[in-house]
Length: 255
Ligand code: PEP
Image (cartoon, rainbow, N blue to C red):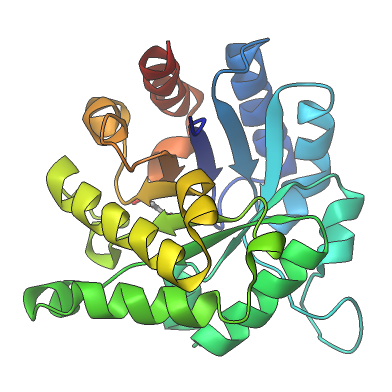
C-alpha cells in the first residue's frame, strides 16, 4: 500500500513569520497521526523558520527548487546540500512555472533529479500538459517525453523516494480541475511508463500526486482514484483550514 503524501507548494508567498504561523497550524492539526505523510514547501526565505516549526513533528519540509551542483558560482541558486542542512526531505523539481518562466528543459531537470536522489532528497518531479496540448490530443506524448527525459539514466536502485506529480498546466491556479477519471487515466499511464523505463517494483511503490486546483471540495474524489497517491497543492495550501481539510480527506480514505 502506498501512503498518501499531501504536499503544499507555497510558491512565492508568505514571509518567514507568517510561514511559521501557518506551519504551526498544520503541525497541530497533523499531531501524532502517521497514516498520511504531509510536507510543506515554503519559499527559501521562510525555510529556516518553518524548519523550526516542524522540528520533532510529523510534518516534513520540502523545497520548491534547487540547483544540480553542490556549490559554486551560481548566483541566486540553492544546492541540495544546503537543503539537507535544514533537514529538508523533499524538493519539487520541474514545476510547470519553472519550465515556462525559467525555460527549464527536461535535461536540466534530469540533472537535478539525479542530484536530489544522490543527496538523500526525495524529488517531486512535476509533469503535465498545457490546454493546447490536451486539446490537440498530445497529453500522453508530452507526459511520456517529460517522464523519459526527467528520469533518464535513473536505475531502480536509485529511485527510492522518487515522487511524481501529474499537474495539468491548465488546472494550476485556474480553479479548473481534471475530473477524477481524466486524472486517473494519466496517472495509470505514468505508472506504466515507470514500469517500462525503470522497473515494475518502482512503478508499484512510487507515489504519483495530482496537482491542479485541488481543494477540500474535490480532494476526496481525486484521492479515491486507484493511482492517485496524494496531492501537490498550491493555492489551497496557503490557509491552514483549507490545507488541513485536504489532509483530513486523505486520513479518512486511509482508515
Ligand atoms: C501547483 O502550483 O503545484 C498547484 C497545483 O497549484 P494550485 O493548487 O493553486 O492549482
